[in-house]
Image (tube, rainbow, N blue to C red; front, side, top):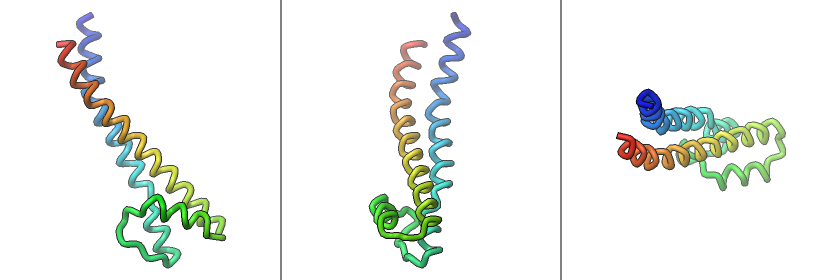
Length: 101
């Protein structure tokens, strides 16, 4: 039973970090600002809002551009999901770690 607690502690301590690394990788794969700049659409920052992406999805007629925007939107949503999972894991990790040991 002691080995089980050790493995559980290791898993709990590393799970928020793993979710954070996965979230960062999805954020890096979201290249929506580059897509906008390639189409000569000026953006203020590298963090393009979801509203702007959805507006361009509706107004654009270029199917390749729409496909790339949908992929960027998909990565953005995966990034948000991983960040939420990370935030949920942190309190669970702290509570479980102190109750196990």
